[in-house]
Length: 341
Image (cartoon, rainbow, N blue to C red; front, side, top):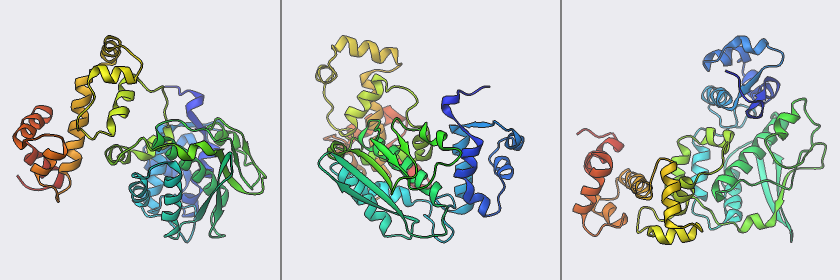
């Protein structure tokens, strides 16, 4: 099956990105084999791989190196789970500026290969990246940090962000076009610093995500960051995003939601039906996800979860939860916590 060129990267770029694995003695052909990919493709002069295949390769390297920086620094690593902890630390920030500053401070607590510093002018925000150690594969680390930062910021605020310009202090590598194709802005090599420059207005953007949506994101964060949004956001997803901050409490009625979306109730119903869902189904899905999120916290009693979900009586919560899932809340909690029936 052929893969669109726009959704692939060259093998040359993959070899640069995964050079930390090579430094630890893992050949590219062996890495392909361990990831369930055909090692013969490594010998193809113009080979390209899909984002799905790149994710599998990166996951294999992370597993072997025990490093979220995929082995690019010899004496420093970011243990698996560090990104998740950082995301939990920033998810309740009021805006993107607070999130960026808190994430930089978080990584500053560890011996990670890079440091980040945010400065703001009247019209522009600038995130400058510097190297903490000299034995790291710096060029590739800077590219990785820029890519992950911009994609994570985009997820946090719920919109695709395009910097004004990305600057690197090193010369353009042979695979520079593969990296540049991931952004809708100029990428400049041979600059004075490694920097992401972006509109200062970004910093006041409120976070569109919540601890509940973060729990969904972290289940497949690598895939979501690498693949990005490959298609426009559908109406059902827009509705989900608007309701996510409510955590399953009192949602607006269909008329009020339609007004927020500048649609008539009839049009909203029709479009949701075309996408195979309905407003009631979306609300029930969000309530179920929120309920599971709270039930996985053993410090909360089931009665407390019911109140947090907006139910005045625990019995009503039990009936609703069993309707959504076919399980009682107690049975679901035992499953989530790995307890015996």
